[in-house]
Image (tube, rainbow over all chains, first blue to last red; front, side, top):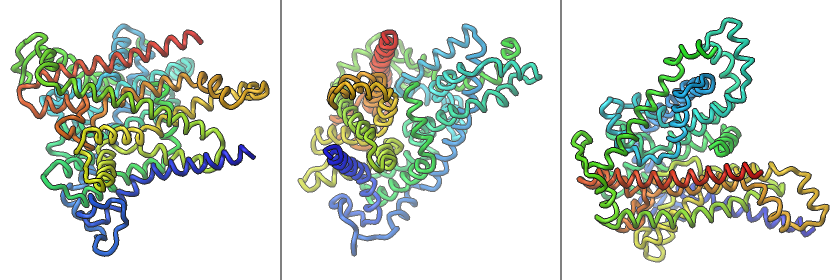
Length: 276
Length: 281
């Protein structure tokens, strides 16, 4: 009986916590339909009468930030960077595990080392390098994301490849497979769970990344975080209504992605944390 | 077999290696070298020895203040987040209804980007403070606690997931045996549960400390350092030193090297602690 009462108390506690977690997102949603001058003064009321402005905040926000193109660039950069990271770092990790030389172990430790270096350490010199090499465009930034994502990705792939028995690969080689075929036809299918984890960890980072794209391509191409920051920092008085609408539009794709692949995300994040 | 694989180096390794050199290795080495020079555009660098490192601390108090602010912020956030996340993880093991729903909700903020998170909380905190005639930039302590609340909201769900995994790994028969022996809930918690999840604790401490130290986007969006740079964390101070002041590029790079060393020491300490624990067990 005492346990039952305790469980009810704990359940209510969780409900209160959950409400506190949903509340901020709900506030933004409500305010995105409110007249802009009422937002900073009374953000916690439901818009009624004159305060209710329908979708006009959305149209104003989309016009001043160019949201559809920001969404397009975010999607383009995230998808192609993830594809490049999965394809190239998995191959690199396999080579590092299978070819044991001084060079490969130096490369491996350099990659692991890069994981602990804060971005500010290389931000200035990296954006200069990108500029000199003409990588300051949406295609070039994919190469930069491959370089920055390589540390964690190679680390996670090598951890898994070490557990793959050599026998399978040798059998494939005897059957006449080249290393390229052996890797893609035999090894990579076994790596799929790790590949999903690597894809999720990197997409959470790249989709939300602000500073790197701002420094490298921010002048000409805006991703979603840059568009939101531009709205706020761009000119003197901030259109709060447009800002609320843009925040809602930025959160929607993330929540859709999260709810559709939640199982993988939570598993992937837990796996990534244990390895990292 | 190794020999045939070696011939495939250009396809297997070269793309990652080239990208890694361009994005990280070259900028890192240049960054270390430039911290000992004075420069505007990299090519005009003049060697100045350690003067940038001295200037980082002596030209103004911004760097020291941002370091103090960051350490305070990290201390409060790390303790708060881990205690709350662990408590929630314990509740999840009681088989209450709606567990999946709660887990979904608690983890959700972790996926929202720092810039967006910062503005969401700015509206809410300003909305509350408005009733008292203040805004988040009226007093540095508003910005500090605003960042603490934001960080809790973002990280609790993530840490909770790691703690839940740790608690679920405790073998059921140990808990059973303890109960048969008459151990009460507090004894089980302190003698079995907490010692068994120590690996999760180290991971969570490491993640919360490094994430607190490296915080940038949230800081930029929530207060941007206002009022008067007094809610500026280290990462934001380095950014401003580089891009908002001319003639300070070398100082900015020196600050970045110091920042890197601090983060690296924390990471190595964590690695050393984990290794030592593994040897013991």
